[in-house]
Image (cartoon, rainbow over all chains, first blue to last red; front, side, top):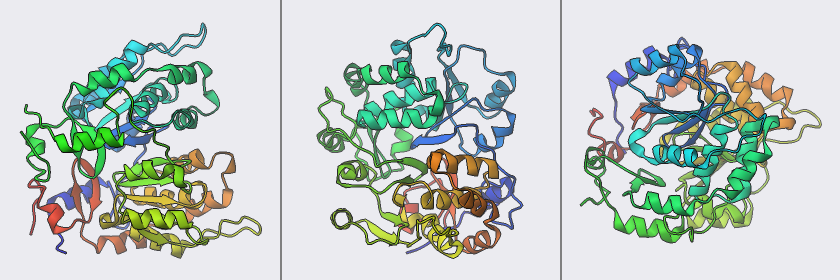
Length: 214
Length: 214
Protein backbone atom coordinates (compact mmCIF):
# COMPACT_ATOMS: atom_id res chain seq x y z
CA UNK A 1 0.00 0.00 0.00
CA UNK A 2 1.54 3.31 -1.05
CA UNK A 3 0.88 6.60 0.68
CA UNK A 4 0.72 10.04 -0.84
CA UNK A 5 1.86 13.40 0.47
CA UNK A 6 0.38 16.75 -0.39
CA UNK A 7 2.80 19.15 1.24
CA UNK A 8 1.07 22.33 0.15
CA UNK A 9 -2.28 21.24 1.50
CA UNK A 10 -0.65 20.03 4.69
CA UNK A 11 0.91 23.42 5.29
CA UNK A 12 -2.37 25.13 4.48
CA UNK A 13 -4.26 22.95 6.91
CA UNK A 14 -1.78 23.46 9.71
CA UNK A 15 -1.70 27.20 9.11
CA UNK A 16 -5.48 27.35 9.00
CA UNK A 17 -5.77 25.10 12.02
CA UNK A 18 -8.40 22.86 10.47
CA UNK A 19 -6.95 19.92 12.33
CA UNK A 20 -3.97 21.20 14.24
CA UNK A 21 -1.18 18.72 13.77
CA UNK A 22 1.15 20.88 15.80
CA UNK A 23 0.96 21.25 19.55
CA UNK A 24 -2.52 22.63 19.24
CA UNK A 25 -1.59 26.08 18.02
CA UNK A 26 -4.25 25.92 15.33
CA UNK A 27 -7.14 28.32 15.78
CA UNK A 28 -10.19 27.05 17.66
CA UNK A 29 -13.27 26.46 15.50
CA UNK A 30 -16.80 27.32 16.62
CA UNK A 31 -19.60 25.46 14.78
CA UNK A 32 -22.97 27.25 14.54
CA UNK A 33 -25.58 26.35 17.13
CA UNK A 34 -27.35 23.03 16.50
CA UNK A 35 -24.80 22.14 13.80
CA UNK A 36 -24.69 18.64 12.36
CA UNK A 37 -23.81 16.75 9.20
CA UNK A 38 -26.94 15.42 7.49
CA UNK A 39 -25.34 13.45 4.69
CA UNK A 40 -22.41 13.63 2.28
CA UNK A 41 -22.05 17.32 1.42
CA UNK A 42 -25.17 18.34 3.38
CA UNK A 43 -25.06 20.16 6.73
CA UNK A 44 -27.67 21.73 9.05
CA UNK A 45 -27.51 24.37 11.78
CA UNK A 46 -29.02 27.44 13.33
CA UNK A 47 -28.22 30.92 11.99
CA UNK A 48 -24.40 31.31 11.86
CA UNK A 49 -22.76 34.49 13.11
CA UNK A 50 -19.26 35.92 12.64
CA UNK A 51 -17.86 33.62 15.35
CA UNK A 52 -18.73 30.64 13.12
CA UNK A 53 -17.22 31.89 9.87
CA UNK A 54 -13.82 30.23 10.29
CA UNK A 55 -15.54 26.92 10.98
CA UNK A 56 -17.81 27.33 7.95
CA UNK A 57 -14.72 27.94 5.81
CA UNK A 58 -13.56 24.41 6.61
CA UNK A 59 -16.76 23.02 5.02
CA UNK A 60 -15.88 24.61 1.65
CA UNK A 61 -19.56 25.38 1.10
CA UNK A 62 -20.88 25.97 -2.39
CA UNK A 63 -24.30 27.14 -1.22
CA UNK A 64 -26.64 27.81 1.67
CA UNK A 65 -30.39 27.22 1.96
CA UNK A 66 -31.79 29.94 4.25
CA UNK A 67 -35.36 29.25 5.36
CA UNK A 68 -36.34 32.56 7.01
CA UNK A 69 -38.21 35.51 5.45
CA UNK A 70 -35.95 38.08 7.18
CA UNK A 71 -33.16 39.63 5.08
CA UNK A 72 -29.84 37.77 5.42
CA UNK A 73 -27.58 39.52 7.96
CA UNK A 74 -25.13 41.88 6.25
CA UNK A 75 -22.03 40.26 7.79
CA UNK A 76 -23.26 36.88 6.53
CA UNK A 77 -23.89 38.35 3.07
CA UNK A 78 -20.30 39.59 3.05
CA UNK A 79 -18.98 36.20 4.21
CA UNK A 80 -20.84 34.46 1.39
CA UNK A 81 -19.53 36.93 -1.18
CA UNK A 82 -15.95 36.55 0.09
CA UNK A 83 -16.19 32.75 -0.12
CA UNK A 84 -18.18 32.52 -3.36
CA UNK A 85 -21.11 30.80 -1.61
CA UNK A 86 -24.51 30.98 -3.32
CA UNK A 87 -27.54 31.82 -1.16
CA UNK A 88 -30.93 30.19 -1.78
CA UNK A 89 -33.53 31.90 0.41
CA UNK A 90 -36.97 30.37 1.02
CA UNK A 91 -38.93 32.65 3.32
CA UNK A 92 -40.89 30.42 5.68
CA UNK A 93 -42.65 32.13 8.58
CA UNK A 94 -41.29 30.87 11.88
CA UNK A 95 -44.12 32.23 14.02
CA UNK A 96 -46.38 29.80 15.85
CA UNK A 97 -49.08 32.29 16.91
CA UNK A 98 -51.31 31.99 15.03
CA UNK A 99 -50.21 28.46 14.05
CA UNK A 100 -48.87 28.45 10.47
CA UNK A 101 -48.61 25.09 8.67
CA UNK A 102 -45.30 24.35 6.96
CA UNK A 103 -45.72 25.42 3.28
CA UNK A 104 -45.33 22.19 1.28
CA UNK A 105 -44.66 23.91 -2.05
CA UNK A 106 -41.80 25.91 -0.55
CA UNK A 107 -40.30 22.81 1.06
CA UNK A 108 -40.47 21.02 -2.30
CA UNK A 109 -38.64 23.87 -4.03
CA UNK A 110 -35.98 23.81 -1.31
CA UNK A 111 -35.67 20.02 -1.68
CA UNK A 112 -34.95 20.38 -5.39
CA UNK A 113 -32.04 22.70 -4.55
CA UNK A 114 -30.91 20.38 -1.75
CA UNK A 115 -30.91 17.27 -3.96
CA UNK A 116 -28.79 18.84 -6.69
CA UNK A 117 -25.16 17.93 -5.99
CA UNK A 118 -24.05 20.92 -8.05
CA UNK A 119 -25.02 22.94 -4.95
CA UNK A 120 -23.00 20.76 -2.58
CA UNK A 121 -21.45 21.11 -0.08
CA UNK A 122 -24.58 22.87 1.16
CA UNK A 123 -25.69 24.18 4.56
CA UNK A 124 -29.38 24.29 5.51
CA UNK A 125 -30.27 26.72 8.26
CA UNK A 126 -33.12 28.82 9.62
CA UNK A 127 -32.79 30.72 12.89
CA UNK A 128 -32.35 27.97 15.48
CA UNK A 129 -32.07 24.91 13.23
CA UNK A 130 -35.08 23.30 14.86
CA UNK A 131 -38.40 23.66 13.01
CA UNK A 132 -37.98 24.87 9.43
CA UNK A 133 -34.63 23.13 9.02
CA UNK A 134 -35.99 20.06 10.80
CA UNK A 135 -38.94 19.82 8.40
CA UNK A 136 -36.75 20.16 5.30
CA UNK A 137 -34.32 17.52 6.57
CA UNK A 138 -37.24 15.29 7.56
CA UNK A 139 -38.64 15.41 4.01
CA UNK A 140 -35.16 14.63 2.70
CA UNK A 141 -35.09 11.57 4.98
CA UNK A 142 -38.45 10.44 3.62
CA UNK A 143 -36.94 10.68 0.14
CA UNK A 144 -34.13 8.47 1.44
CA UNK A 145 -36.80 5.97 2.53
CA UNK A 146 -36.17 6.38 6.26
CA UNK A 147 -39.01 4.94 8.32
CA UNK A 148 -41.35 7.60 9.68
CA UNK A 149 -40.49 6.98 13.32
CA UNK A 150 -36.79 7.62 12.60
CA UNK A 151 -37.68 10.77 10.65
CA UNK A 152 -39.68 12.05 13.62
CA UNK A 153 -36.99 11.03 16.12
CA UNK A 154 -34.41 13.04 14.19
CA UNK A 155 -36.74 16.06 14.09
CA UNK A 156 -37.32 15.84 17.88
CA UNK A 157 -33.58 15.33 18.41
CA UNK A 158 -32.85 18.83 17.09
CA UNK A 159 -36.07 20.58 18.13
CA UNK A 160 -35.71 19.29 21.69
CA UNK A 161 -38.27 20.82 24.05
CA UNK A 162 -39.43 23.07 21.19
CA UNK A 163 -40.74 20.12 19.17
CA UNK A 164 -44.01 21.03 17.42
CA UNK A 165 -46.88 18.65 16.76
CA UNK A 166 -47.77 20.63 13.62
CA UNK A 167 -44.30 19.93 12.18
CA UNK A 168 -44.55 16.23 13.03
CA UNK A 169 -47.95 16.10 11.32
CA UNK A 170 -46.44 17.82 8.28
CA UNK A 171 -43.66 15.25 8.12
CA UNK A 172 -46.14 12.42 8.48
CA UNK A 173 -48.39 13.69 5.70
CA UNK A 174 -45.68 14.91 3.31
CA UNK A 175 -46.11 12.94 0.09
CA UNK A 176 -42.79 12.13 -1.54
CA UNK A 177 -44.16 10.09 -4.45
CA UNK A 178 -44.72 13.01 -6.82
CA UNK A 179 -41.43 14.58 -5.79
CA UNK A 180 -39.60 11.29 -6.33
CA UNK A 181 -41.03 11.08 -9.82
CA UNK A 182 -40.00 14.69 -10.46
CA UNK A 183 -36.47 14.03 -9.19
CA UNK A 184 -36.30 10.83 -11.18
CA UNK A 185 -36.47 12.97 -14.30
CA UNK A 186 -33.03 14.19 -13.30
CA UNK A 187 -30.11 11.87 -13.95
CA UNK A 188 -28.35 10.55 -10.86
CA UNK A 189 -25.48 8.26 -10.08
CA UNK A 190 -23.32 7.04 -7.24
CA UNK A 191 -20.75 9.30 -5.65
CA UNK A 192 -17.79 7.55 -3.99
CA UNK A 193 -18.61 4.98 -1.37
CA UNK A 194 -21.97 6.41 -0.40
CA UNK A 195 -25.10 5.04 -2.04
CA UNK A 196 -27.09 8.19 -2.65
CA UNK A 197 -28.18 9.42 -6.05
CA UNK A 198 -25.96 12.28 -7.19
CA UNK A 199 -26.12 14.68 -10.12
CA UNK A 200 -22.56 15.20 -11.32
CA UNK A 201 -20.69 17.47 -13.70
CA UNK A 202 -18.95 15.69 -16.54
CA UNK A 203 -15.63 17.01 -15.22
CA UNK A 204 -16.38 15.49 -11.84
CA UNK A 205 -17.34 12.18 -13.35
CA UNK A 206 -14.19 11.80 -15.43
CA UNK A 207 -12.20 11.67 -12.20
CA UNK A 208 -14.06 8.51 -11.23
CA UNK A 209 -13.06 5.83 -13.75
CA UNK A 210 -15.18 3.24 -11.90
CA UNK A 211 -18.26 5.13 -13.08
CA UNK A 212 -19.63 4.38 -16.56
CA UNK A 213 -20.45 7.39 -18.71
CA UNK A 214 -22.42 8.08 -21.86
CA UNK B 1 -22.26 20.79 -18.27
CA UNK B 2 -22.55 17.12 -19.17
CA UNK B 3 -24.47 14.61 -17.12
CA UNK B 4 -23.70 10.93 -16.71
CA UNK B 5 -25.91 7.88 -16.43
CA UNK B 6 -25.09 4.65 -14.64
CA UNK B 7 -27.96 2.40 -15.60
CA UNK B 8 -26.80 -0.65 -13.70
CA UNK B 9 -26.38 1.27 -10.46
CA UNK B 10 -29.70 3.00 -11.01
CA UNK B 11 -31.51 -0.30 -11.30
CA UNK B 12 -29.68 -1.60 -8.25
CA UNK B 13 -30.65 1.44 -6.26
CA UNK B 14 -34.28 1.28 -7.23
CA UNK B 15 -34.42 -2.46 -6.54
CA UNK B 16 -32.71 -2.00 -3.20
CA UNK B 17 -34.83 1.01 -2.40
CA UNK B 18 -31.93 3.17 -1.24
CA UNK B 19 -33.70 6.22 -2.61
CA UNK B 20 -36.85 5.02 -4.25
CA UNK B 21 -37.22 6.85 -7.52
CA UNK B 22 -40.35 4.92 -8.32
CA UNK B 23 -43.68 5.42 -6.66
CA UNK B 24 -42.18 4.66 -3.29
CA UNK B 25 -42.03 0.92 -3.69
CA UNK B 26 -38.49 0.85 -2.31
CA UNK B 27 -38.06 -0.87 1.04
CA UNK B 28 -38.23 1.28 4.15
CA UNK B 29 -34.92 1.81 5.94
CA UNK B 30 -34.59 1.86 9.72
CA UNK B 31 -31.45 3.62 11.08
CA UNK B 32 -30.12 2.41 14.44
CA UNK B 33 -31.21 4.35 17.52
CA UNK B 34 -29.35 7.65 18.03
CA UNK B 35 -27.86 7.39 14.52
CA UNK B 36 -26.05 10.35 13.01
CA UNK B 37 -23.29 11.20 10.56
CA UNK B 38 -20.23 12.54 12.39
CA UNK B 39 -18.05 13.44 9.42
CA UNK B 40 -17.14 12.18 5.95
CA UNK B 41 -17.15 8.38 6.25
CA UNK B 42 -17.77 8.42 10.03
CA UNK B 43 -21.12 7.53 11.63
CA UNK B 44 -22.36 7.05 15.22
CA UNK B 45 -25.29 5.20 16.75
CA UNK B 46 -26.55 2.90 19.46
CA UNK B 47 -26.26 -0.88 19.11
CA UNK B 48 -27.80 -1.91 15.76
CA UNK B 49 -30.14 -4.89 15.57
CA UNK B 50 -31.42 -6.93 12.63
CA UNK B 51 -34.04 -4.30 11.79
CA UNK B 52 -31.20 -1.87 10.98
CA UNK B 53 -29.13 -4.13 8.76
CA UNK B 54 -30.65 -3.02 5.44
CA UNK B 55 -30.01 0.61 6.41
CA UNK B 56 -26.42 -0.17 7.41
CA UNK B 57 -25.90 -1.82 4.02
CA UNK B 58 -26.50 1.56 2.37
CA UNK B 59 -23.51 2.99 4.30
CA UNK B 60 -21.14 0.49 2.66
CA UNK B 61 -19.26 0.22 5.95
CA UNK B 62 -15.68 -1.02 5.98
CA UNK B 63 -15.50 -1.26 9.76
CA UNK B 64 -17.21 -0.78 13.09
CA UNK B 65 -15.80 0.48 16.39
CA UNK B 66 -17.70 -1.30 19.19
CA UNK B 67 -17.08 0.22 22.61
CA UNK B 68 -18.68 -2.36 24.93
CA UNK B 69 -16.99 -5.27 26.76
CA UNK B 70 -19.90 -7.62 26.04
CA UNK B 71 -19.47 -10.11 23.16
CA UNK B 72 -20.84 -8.79 19.85
CA UNK B 73 -24.36 -10.20 19.21
CA UNK B 74 -24.24 -13.29 16.99
CA UNK B 75 -26.65 -11.85 14.39
CA UNK B 76 -24.44 -8.75 14.17
CA UNK B 77 -21.34 -10.92 13.81
CA UNK B 78 -23.02 -12.70 10.92
CA UNK B 79 -24.05 -9.40 9.32
CA UNK B 80 -20.47 -8.14 9.48
CA UNK B 81 -19.14 -11.39 7.97
CA UNK B 82 -21.70 -11.29 5.16
CA UNK B 83 -20.79 -7.68 4.35
CA UNK B 84 -17.02 -7.94 4.87
CA UNK B 85 -17.08 -5.39 7.69
CA UNK B 86 -14.17 -5.42 10.14
CA UNK B 87 -14.96 -5.18 13.87
CA UNK B 88 -12.72 -3.21 16.23
CA UNK B 89 -13.86 -3.85 19.81
CA UNK B 90 -12.71 -1.70 22.71
CA UNK B 91 -14.33 -2.96 25.90
CA UNK B 92 -15.23 0.09 27.96
CA UNK B 93 -17.36 -0.53 31.04
CA UNK B 94 -20.68 1.28 30.76
CA UNK B 95 -21.62 1.00 34.41
CA UNK B 96 -21.91 4.16 36.50
CA UNK B 97 -22.14 2.49 39.95
CA UNK B 98 -19.46 2.65 41.14
CA UNK B 99 -18.47 5.59 38.89
CA UNK B 100 -15.85 4.48 36.37
CA UNK B 101 -13.80 7.20 34.62
CA UNK B 102 -13.55 6.93 30.84
CA UNK B 103 -10.25 5.07 30.11
CA UNK B 104 -8.11 7.57 28.20
CA UNK B 105 -5.69 4.97 26.82
CA UNK B 106 -8.55 2.97 25.32
CA UNK B 107 -10.11 6.08 23.79
CA UNK B 108 -6.75 6.98 22.23
CA UNK B 109 -6.43 3.52 20.68
CA UNK B 110 -9.96 3.82 19.31
CA UNK B 111 -9.14 7.29 17.93
CA UNK B 112 -6.19 5.88 16.00
CA UNK B 113 -8.53 3.40 14.31
CA UNK B 114 -11.14 6.13 13.75
CA UNK B 115 -8.66 8.54 12.13
CA UNK B 116 -7.36 5.99 9.63
CA UNK B 117 -9.35 6.43 6.42
CA UNK B 118 -8.47 2.86 5.43
CA UNK B 119 -11.15 1.90 7.97
CA UNK B 120 -13.76 4.25 6.49
CA UNK B 121 -16.72 4.29 6.11
CA UNK B 122 -16.79 3.45 9.81
CA UNK B 123 -19.58 3.25 12.39
CA UNK B 124 -18.90 3.99 16.07
CA UNK B 125 -21.39 2.51 18.51
CA UNK B 126 -21.75 1.34 22.08
CA UNK B 127 -25.11 0.28 23.49
CA UNK B 128 -27.15 3.50 23.37
CA UNK B 129 -24.77 5.80 21.51
CA UNK B 130 -24.69 8.24 24.39
CA UNK B 131 -21.71 7.98 26.76
CA UNK B 132 -18.89 5.85 25.37
CA UNK B 133 -19.65 6.84 21.78
CA UNK B 134 -20.15 10.46 22.88
CA UNK B 135 -16.75 10.56 24.56
CA UNK B 136 -14.95 9.10 21.54
CA UNK B 137 -16.67 11.53 19.18
CA UNK B 138 -15.96 14.39 21.58
CA UNK B 139 -12.23 13.61 21.54
CA UNK B 140 -12.38 13.45 17.74
CA UNK B 141 -13.95 16.95 17.76
CA UNK B 142 -11.13 18.23 19.97
CA UNK B 143 -8.70 16.85 17.38
CA UNK B 144 -10.68 18.84 14.81
CA UNK B 145 -10.13 21.93 16.98
CA UNK B 146 -13.79 22.37 17.89
CA UNK B 147 -14.21 24.74 20.83
CA UNK B 148 -14.87 22.91 24.11
CA UNK B 149 -18.38 24.30 24.52
CA UNK B 150 -19.40 22.91 21.13
CA UNK B 151 -17.80 19.55 21.98
CA UNK B 152 -19.82 19.41 25.20
CA UNK B 153 -23.01 20.58 23.47
CA UNK B 154 -22.69 17.74 20.96
CA UNK B 155 -22.13 15.22 23.77
CA UNK B 156 -25.23 16.48 25.63
CA UNK B 157 -27.18 16.48 22.38
CA UNK B 158 -26.89 12.69 22.10
CA UNK B 159 -26.75 11.83 25.81
CA UNK B 160 -29.87 13.89 26.50
CA UNK B 161 -31.16 13.46 30.04
CA UNK B 162 -28.49 10.76 30.58
CA UNK B 163 -25.65 13.31 30.24
CA UNK B 164 -22.86 12.52 32.75
CA UNK B 165 -20.69 15.09 34.49
CA UNK B 166 -17.83 12.57 34.60
CA UNK B 167 -17.88 12.30 30.79
CA UNK B 168 -17.93 16.09 30.40
CA UNK B 169 -14.95 16.35 32.76
CA UNK B 170 -13.16 13.67 30.72
CA UNK B 171 -13.77 15.63 27.52
CA UNK B 172 -12.58 18.84 29.15
CA UNK B 173 -9.36 17.29 30.44
CA UNK B 174 -8.58 15.07 27.44
CA UNK B 175 -5.19 16.18 26.13
CA UNK B 176 -4.99 16.01 22.35
CA UNK B 177 -1.48 17.43 21.99
CA UNK B 178 0.40 14.15 22.31
CA UNK B 179 -2.15 12.36 20.16
CA UNK B 180 -1.91 15.09 17.49
CA UNK B 181 1.85 14.64 17.41
CA UNK B 182 1.38 10.87 17.14
CA UNK B 183 -1.12 11.24 14.32
CA UNK B 184 1.09 13.78 12.59
CA UNK B 185 3.62 11.01 12.12
CA UNK B 186 1.11 9.48 9.72
CA UNK B 187 0.82 11.00 6.25
CA UNK B 188 -2.48 12.71 5.48
CA UNK B 189 -4.02 14.55 2.58
CA UNK B 190 -7.26 16.08 1.44
CA UNK B 191 -10.16 13.90 0.38
CA UNK B 192 -12.58 15.52 -2.11
CA UNK B 193 -14.08 18.82 -1.09
CA UNK B 194 -13.80 18.27 2.66
CA UNK B 195 -10.83 19.68 4.51
CA UNK B 196 -9.93 16.86 6.83
CA UNK B 197 -6.64 14.99 6.84
CA UNK B 198 -7.00 11.61 5.19
CA UNK B 199 -4.73 8.61 4.85
CA UNK B 200 -5.25 7.15 1.39
CA UNK B 201 -4.25 4.08 -0.55
CA UNK B 202 -2.23 4.72 -3.66
CA UNK B 203 -5.04 3.18 -5.71
CA UNK B 204 -7.49 5.59 -4.16
CA UNK B 205 -5.26 8.55 -4.80
CA UNK B 206 -4.75 7.86 -8.50
CA UNK B 207 -8.46 8.46 -9.06
CA UNK B 208 -8.01 12.03 -7.84
CA UNK B 209 -5.75 13.74 -10.41
CA UNK B 210 -6.17 17.05 -8.58
CA UNK B 211 -4.07 15.60 -5.77
CA UNK B 212 -0.29 15.75 -6.12
CA UNK B 213 1.55 12.52 -5.48
CA UNK B 214 5.11 11.46 -4.87
